[in-house]
Image (cartoon, rainbow, N blue to C red; front, side, top):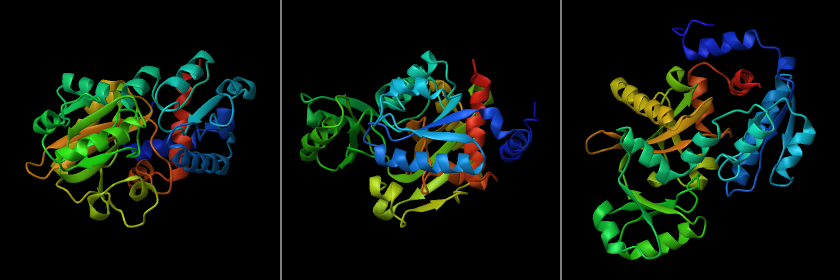
Length: 330
C-alpha cells in the first residue's frame, strides 16, 4: 500500500504506473440515459470513452436510454464507468442492476446514490450529523405560500428534489412567485423542495475514496455571469469564471473541505463525488447544498478541474477512477 502521506496526485500517478490497461478487461461506459440531464451525460460519457481508449482500455459505450438496460449482461463487461447523471443513473437504480449482475462500477452504491439524489433525505442526514445546510421544507400544492416565505425568508430557492444541473430551479423574490416556481419544479418531479437562499460565494469540493480514507480535492470558487449558475452557465457558457485555488483564506478552504468530507461520509459515498457549497457573505459560514455522486466529466466540469490542480490530467483521472472498481470485483 502506498504511503498516504504522499499527496493524492502523486499517489494516483504511482497507482497508474503499476496498472496495465488489459487488467481492466472489457469496460462499459454508461452514458446518455433517460433523465433530464441526458445531453450532459452524453458529453461526459463520450469524454470518458475517449480518455479510456486513449489509455489503451477496451472500452465501449452503452446507452441505457436507447437500449434496454438488461442488455448489459449480453455485453459481458468486466466493469463499467457510470457517466449517467440524474434519475435512472445516479439514483441507485442502475447500481442495483449492476450489483445483481455482479459487475463492478465506479461511484457510490445503491443506498448512497438513492440518498444523495433526494435533496430532502440528504439534508435530513446532514442535519442529524450536525452539518450545516440551508433551512428548507417540502412543498405541495396545498402549501401556505406566505408561511413558507416567512419561515425561509426571501429570496428563497425552489427546485425539484430529484433533479440536478439546476433543472426546474427558480430563485423566488416575492411570495406571489411561489405558485409558479412550485409548478415549474413539480412538472419535473413529484417531490419539490424550498430552501433559504444563501447569498455569497458559490463553491464546490470534489471528493475521492471511501469512509475514513476519503479525501477532499482542491476547492473551486465559481463566479457565473450575474450570479446565475444556471444550466447554460454551467455547461455551455465561457463567461463563467472558475478559481482553483479559490483565492479565499486557506483556513476557510480547509473548513469547506472538512464540511464536504463530513457530508460525503455521512451519506456513505465511495470512489468519488462532489459537494456543492454556498459561503454566506454575512458571516463567512459555509452551507452544504447537495452531493453529486456521478459528477460531470465535460469540458466545463469541476472534478477534472480540481484534479488538474492536484497534478492529475483528465485521462489519468478517468483511468484511476475506473481502476478503483478493481477492489469491488466479486
